[in-house]
Length: 265
Image 1 (tube, rainbow, N blue to C red):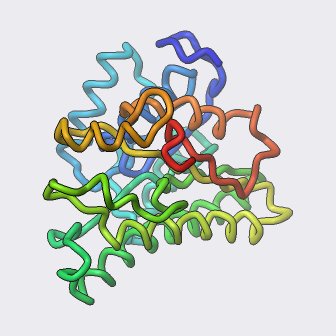
Image 2 (cartoon, one colour; image 1 turned 180 degrees about the vertical axis):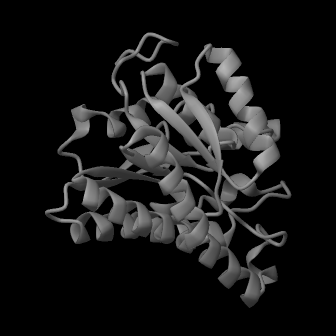
Image 3 (tube, one colour; image 1 turned 180 degrees about the horizontal axis):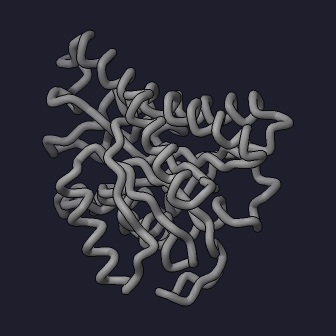
């Protein structure tokens, strides 16, 4: 699979909306789409940062095949405006990548400290923030005659947490995260079955941990659970994303692909 910068054609001409496209992983997804000849829409709630990321990627890749649309994944009005804008600009939308991960200020507390209202708010924002975009985009895809949805889950939606790697750190594996990501995998399968006969594929990617400023001691503990590399770099999911977006995976549907360097084995 050719993923060299500016060399690929696996997504030639495809118009792909990435929610949370201005985030850590989202930016890498956007770059990989452009590198493979696609058109990437950065759909993000942070307007200032989204425009900055768009300009940076345009300059880095010397490409105009990326633009920003402000999007609130919990608002039907915002989502429909995004769909209408992209359709008016390109006449079609080939795929949606549900990558956004909204959370409130109390997200990530240890289990005994989690309040009911926070738990419900975070689950609602995340699972609802997948369902509502998927609902409206799939209606568009049904009318169009085809479509593709990719949900970004996590290895901790597949296996129970390895709490031992968090010992002697201030970190934890949030209970909200486990509930959200496991639910997302089942929603992926649900939607794939529900869309039978509509020519709409739905799949998920479940990555292992992504390097993002964690302590050396935590990384050592984490990496001991892996088989080759250890914790992933932010661009290590790109090949899997491109595969699910391109025609090579046209009969892959309702699946969850784990990318974790053997962490879950």
